[in-house]
Image (tube, rainbow, N blue to C red; front, side, top):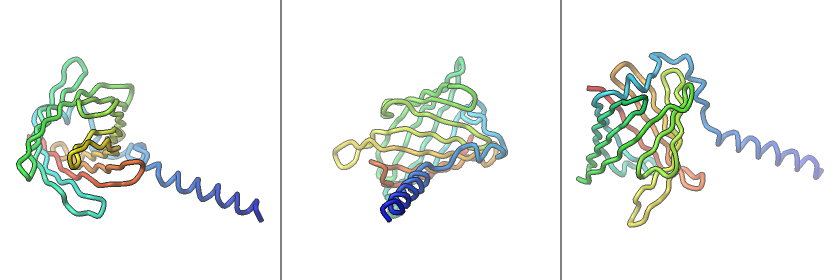
Length: 177
């Protein structure tokens, strides 16, 4: 009897861990149009989005203008946010290739290094972002998915979590000018 319970516990633990693994970017390998970061993130983009809590309530809305430039294989994405409450924010990303379909990124409020994988029409970024929350700073894990719709439009959905618990989402659309 104890052996059965132990086996059941192992199967349950493996199932739960597998559920936490998320989507493998390779499932989008045949997605069209194929995403080229060098092509899409080049020039000026507008983004419109919202931040929701884990219950789905919209906390803030924003518009972001991204000035994206490439030099010697490295991208600089200068993001200027205007939030619905009037706050203005700036984040400057530096993006570098890290092998076929792989990218790394950094920004002043990113803890460590962002790691990205491009497959087909999708990009998956994973990173930790220092986010101000009620007078303190939370280091939130981001699982960030971008899907190229056509040459101009990309949809982006990021799940935020803390200690493995989902705390909210960011949803936005980008349009190339």
